[in-house]
Image 1 (cartoon, rainbow, N blue to C red):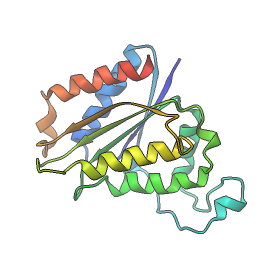
Image 2: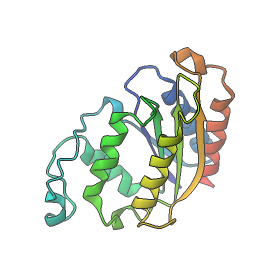
Image 3: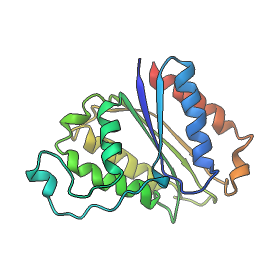
Image 4: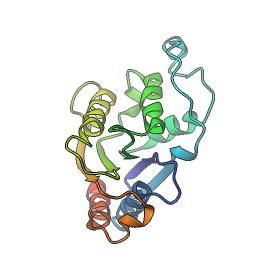
Length: 187
């Protein structure tokens, strides 16, 4: 059974990106996979301190918080899905903290199970280049944790704009797209 870790970084409840996560998780389960959704927006995850403690202590981070659970789940995942609302043309600070704190797992041997990834993102506005930094950051992060190569396959990127209020996504075709992406990431 394929284990898919979904990191939902919105701090709003309910939220548009969380709706995408739940739709994707249903697709994963319907395809016979296991979906683990962590609402990192609700977790206590501090920033990386740049102290390099992890370099000399077997990939253990000096910061003791909920990132320990995220690291554990990442090491058990076959696929990783990142979900974020767009805040000021970039990922949420909650997701950025997770990206930075993943450095503790360098050189990323513990993440070798991860073979597939996907990105789910929502934005309240539609402007040229609104999602560029988000997509570039996702691609760079996946390349990095994949061992600085294309070992992790990106199976989909869903970017939905013009959804500000949580109810805006209710009938959006992107929900079906997320469901199908969940099925695809398991196959």
